Length: 205
Image 1 (cartoon, rainbow, N blue to C red):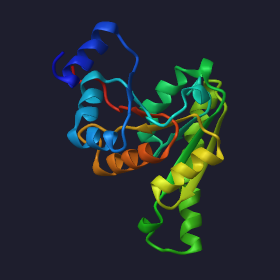
Image 2: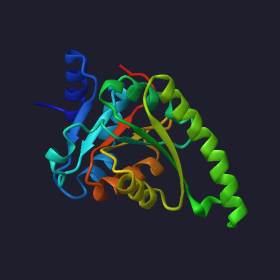
Image 3: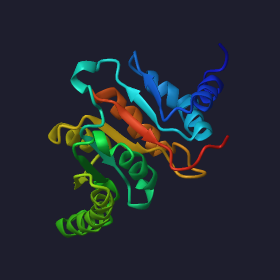
């Protein structure tokens, strides 16, 4: 009983929980949860990842959500916490796909040459992320997509037959910025698989 954020954070501490799992039962529920700041507060204060389950999801399809995770990252630095958390689950991971989505609207030169340059730069960072997984004994494959983040990530989860989408939740002082909120909320409405948000800073408690 009481404030949800306070009770969840308290339970995480008392039980020494590794992560928090939230079920979304109605359309728009996660969007409201994000807008209200509850999800950000839980991650910031507990320092634990939060997994969001879609209300439409058939649980029997994903008996092991960590079997084939898709890690969506902006760059190598922003993936540090996600890499550490997933590496700790290596015994139950079959393969990790690492994806970076570059928005075509942000390309300074909307040309084939600019797209190729963007792909090359992003691929180098994705290769570095995959290299860290491979050093830990986890099979990993890099991917670079160009376009709308929500559309491209959704397409990648289908093409790569992913069992889980993993995203970094934010950096210190930038908890769940507008872009992360919009992308996560949009994907939670479309994907029929869980989304795991990993905080990039330690617990504030």
